[in-house]
Image (cartoon, rainbow, N blue to C red; front, top):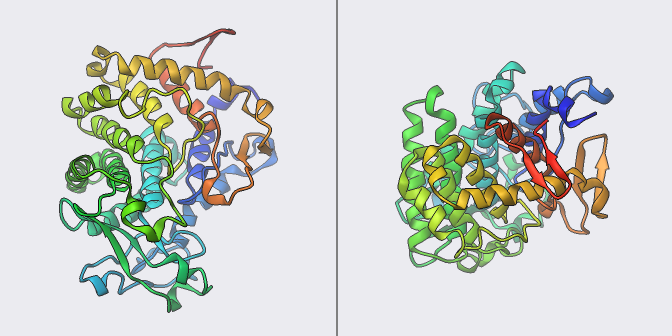
Length: 395
């Protein structure tokens, strides 16, 4: 199947994106449409969203589709005097890790922003919105004051020693926070990105909720910038599970880029432009896009914002990002042939097997799904990719 044929099937985009973030820990790309290649990708899309309902923590709603689950974690935060009921369990364990959870909500929101109409046509838009709101409702609770964000509930060490249903948890539910004395710029800015992206999603469907999300996003943006530091240095408890290996500079730009998209405010646009070089956002050496590393996403989103926002067109940075994004597209076209540690399942389901656990699955040379997302924006702006091999059109 050619790239042009792929673009005729919008569900390919959707499944590629949604399966990519179907767990808070993994980046796996899948794309197709029901019946294409003999696989029912429509069902896969539905199941990828159903997964989030299975991972819910807290008091479950009446319309919960995963009926074998029940309420859990109803005293989360009680020991610290805060209400931290809700959110998502990490995986088979019951810890609620803030950084990968926030990235998951950011990516879900991005999927809806780009392909909401297609999600609606498959009957899955409402489920996607519910999945996003389940996460953002929790983030609102976790952001108890402008410079305080609760980063984790539960302890991975004790949790992983005991395999049990979340409804029967007997392990520690201690909560951990970042604040002025224990900074976590990476977590604060990723959560800001999630809130900002979600504010765009709910702008029309929930106009009273959207400004609330944006308010929290802006506060978290300032918190992450003013009090800088890695969250895993403030909270050693996360280091064995979701260590911020890449640091926080990518999240500083990632959060600003999403807020510039959500607000059209010159402050955030200028932040991205002025700080990009200093924070490493223009580096060529991008080999990962995941809950830990977002530089490639910054470059893509800034380039897309340039297409959508006239204010960006007056700045040089997005053009540089656009050029760098273009380079990735050519690499991605041959990704399954040129990188030995990539395995290909079915036709367009690829993942990296790098002798590491699933938390670090990633798509090298930027995510495969972003090729298709970016090509849609090239098409909208009547742009092509200029490469050594020649001109490549979005189709």
